[in-house]
Image 1: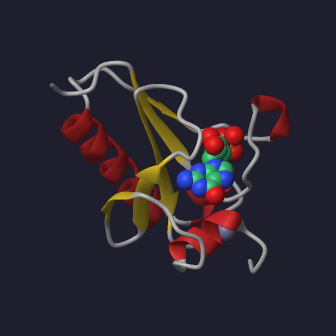
Image 2: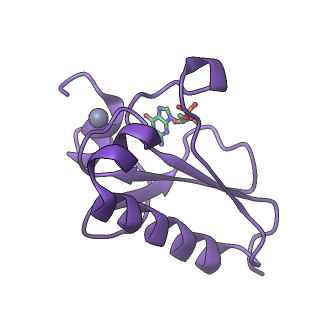
Length: 108
Ligand code: 5GP
Ligand code: ZN
């Protein structure tokens, strides 16, 4: 997926503000944050969206969910959203599966 922006971030070809990482996924700050905490959870391997990821690799899916909830618990007071926009009509703009961790309540 040579033209995929998130594949390029995973490969280190585009810089990002890394927050955390795991065996199968990385977490980095969204370039255009919608809330005080806005972190993207991105599998290292390319999947089109969360439905494709769920259908094709449960191990990676579980790793994405674990990394997202870990980041959320480390950065927020415990209230957060973990959102997967799926399909253009639902607002998906990058077609490499990713979850958004957003929160209005950063840890003090
Ligand atoms: P989507 O709309 O597909 O659910 O989310 C894509 C997200 O990726 C958007 O919130 C957008 O701000 C973010 N994004 C797009 N390009 C880049 C980039 O090059 N670096 C970072 N850190 N975030 C990006
Ligand atoms: Zn990709």
